[in-house]
Length: 208
Image (cartoon, rainbow, N blue to C red; front, side, top):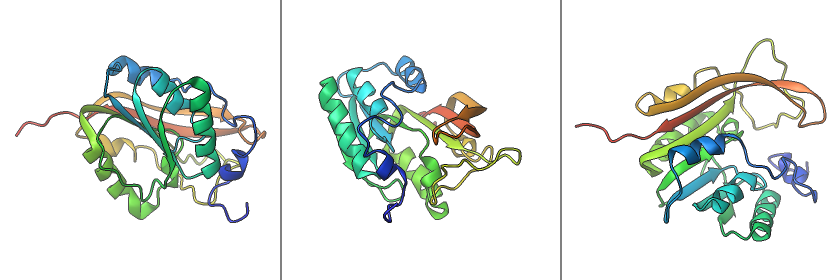
């Protein structure tokens, strides 16, 4: 891996898009709950090669996206240019990123497992702070099951979570969707299974 922190730095250097260019299904849930209007801001954490960030920009949101991989961000910018949209895309680390902006939608898919254990609490405190009132969060994370073997393409810095760990971070939010699923994946060209917890939550205005 040439000392890269993630194998995806190399995988994203290929001409084709490793994850394809079709947007994730969960984006329609977000759009249906918070239709785009001028000035509405979206943050994609761990955007990979940019397929979801670019799609949200096409739908009319103002999109910011970051990823740990330089190759991924280069392809994100290239895809945005091809699709005729503008997004703010840059290299950053989920463990240390900072921003003064506030967002109406924040999402991340397949990235939370890169959080260091001592950064998890601070990450969710930061996310709560930068989410606007009635803003939406969508996150998913891979969780451990004793009957599912470790994925063959598991990165050295990935840490698998426990069922419910993600859900417990949103006890004071309005939950629109919560799910645990087991599915087959062929991302490494070797069929294998994952278990994933997903949540879509809305930040409410609290009574005093």
